[in-house]
Image 1 (cartoon, rainbow, N blue to C red):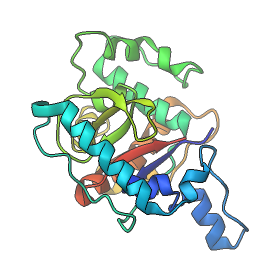
Image 2: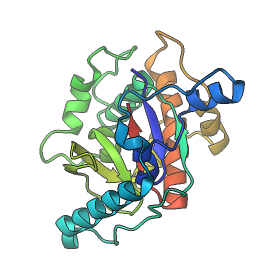
Image 3: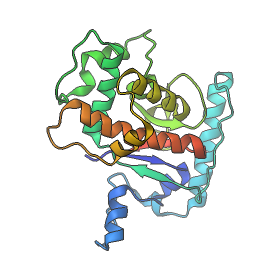
Image 4: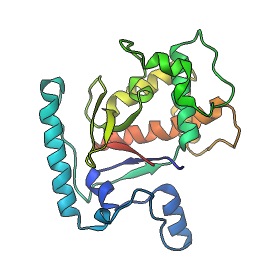
Length: 236
């Protein structure tokens, strides 16, 4: 199953008015009709007005539930015309990045050479998510699916616009945590990181090149989310 990362208004996302990198490439090559996303529904083909109203209502309810714990207002450009950005790290490379962070945080454990099939049960990742443990990479390691543009340190579980239970984090905190991870491991320059985004790992590649590719994709998109004050979301 493919894993894409979307940065943009949630109105545009739920209206289906965007393309992932493969769909865009197919369209630009004239390769035929766009591929329908697995979770696309009839509601996404409707006019965006009702969708925007539902997203704004969801955001208002979320702000009320968080109360004083949120240091800044939950506010971003929630319109159908907002710009959007996408990338495709893929599940394997994304999982490799999560494990790369987990083992950077627990250096006494030896990381696997290859990504395990059940990587979400990895012992280093389990330690990162243990009750009471304050992970340096919490907005990456804690199963976050949606990152909001405002700066806040905690992650939390709640409902998304579709009323699914998800974990929510901060794009601004993710940017900082990714920078910390780079400083602790690769110490790569910005130009090198940008290059990693265009270098998907080959099948059966070791853990590190997979992690580098996902790092390049996420670092660039998280920066776009912060610079444009837009949510960032996993799409699968």
